[in-house]
Image (cartoon, rainbow, N blue to C red; front, side, top):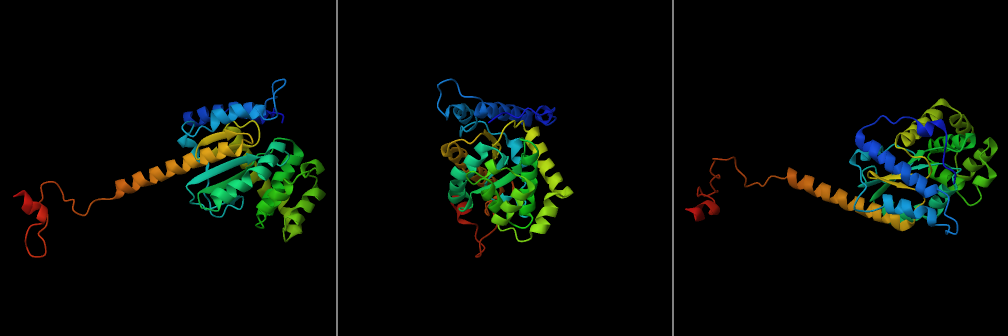
Length: 285
């Protein structure tokens, strides 16, 4: 898959230092995930480096990037509980073959294993980098989402052979019909409207800000992962994020709890119901 070379992809990044560092990592991992394979290398050779760099469960987490998760219960382009302990943000393009591979081969298994169990939330970000048809498909997906059919549209657009048919206006309408979008006239208006353009622009700018230069790119609780990595890369990252979230929640709960027997310094414990001092105090006499 060619690396995007538009001016937008190289625009200056003006964000906090932790995000700059992560953007550098995501950019390098994006290149590694999509660079041409060395002569004689197998088809999976180009993705190994990115998996080693970005999916290590013990490193590569940037807490600043967790804030990019919207956790909006009304988000029509998200799947899973808004309060799930792990959020995977996916930056993708409907004309991207590797995105289609992830959508067909990996994402359904992640949904079954983690989303259905309440552990994972997936938040989609439209990141069109392959021209006008990419932009049109992104707006169409958003428009389908306004009628509650985003994920059905997503499935239809990533079906085997779908991208080869292109994403012209008639084709997008056919995909919306296949996805079960109830009001196709509204779908057409929404897809060409200002709100769709603004929503796609917002997602796209966020991806560029993070240094993503190819699709798909991911953030899993602040851990950047680039490319359609093997299932194991995602399960390691999600499991690690879930453990970290559980440990954090446990520490916060422990810090918030105050033992009922604790009394201010210098004060004696209150007398028991018979007027006697508590057993602990009696034993100390």
